[in-house]
Image (cartoon, rainbow, N blue to C red; front, side):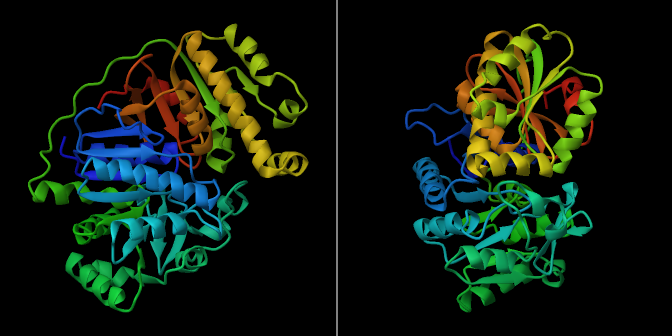
Length: 423
């Protein structure tokens, strides 16, 4: 296997988003879940995306996990490396984006790296170094109330400099409009000024293609999935990538279910939409903390309802409900209780015949796939931008859609099961 691109993602849904982007551009891509075993046999591919559950960990732990994944990819001889985070730059003033990027720069001996969370297709853009969600600044969007990583500053320069020991600079819209050569000149100028973190404006997909070309020779690139759009063309141009048709993936039949732990506004709407015509069970962290066997209750409820229509098991709630639970239980403890419970539920659902499963929320997805023992995924057809069907490598044969909390149309949970996962 001649590995071209080695990627480390800070959550499971974001990793799937990145893998889907690469597949659509013609790269054979495998997603691995957690730091892989040394002896793990990986199908022949052009890119590997290692999905970590590190976004909300302590910075030191996130760095350790990320460097372990990077070390595994370096052993495979990747030509270029990619650190993937959310298109809303989810983090706190302590990290984890800055500390992980700093550590990767040091290990790889890079002079600098770039930062670009933009994903215009999903209305994430960067202008004058400020991140927008649709027409709103990030700090005015629903992300300001995120239960784990509230984003109250839209300036990526300021956010990153609070997290990192390195200075940050910016390549603005006007430079990117002039093409890849102008961007490379800006890189050289900023690097000579001692700037090692370079933030990139991006308003359109065309900007992402230009930036991909400009970054062809960088050891390390960081960004959301959109920043990877222009990279496959670099490998094809250098003769390392032969773009062809993807191999068909196996058909998966069996019962269907949705597990939703995200509390983003988008997921709240998706839960409300599905509850109108489908059976739903709500997981309450306070009840779990009081000693109730909520996982058992959910499974007893599910056993009598599995059939042709998907069922919904969710902890998704609005900001007031989440805040009340966190005040009573503590932020981290409340989240851990829900994740552990949904992980147990997922494992038992598969035991009783569920084979197609949607999971909403990066932290929830990490808990679920870890509980299921899935080590790797092949990437199938996209349901909505950034959210494809994936197919487990090994047994049991599962179809999984790992959805970022912020992604998908209001009817996502319902329509997903009508989409054929084959590319």
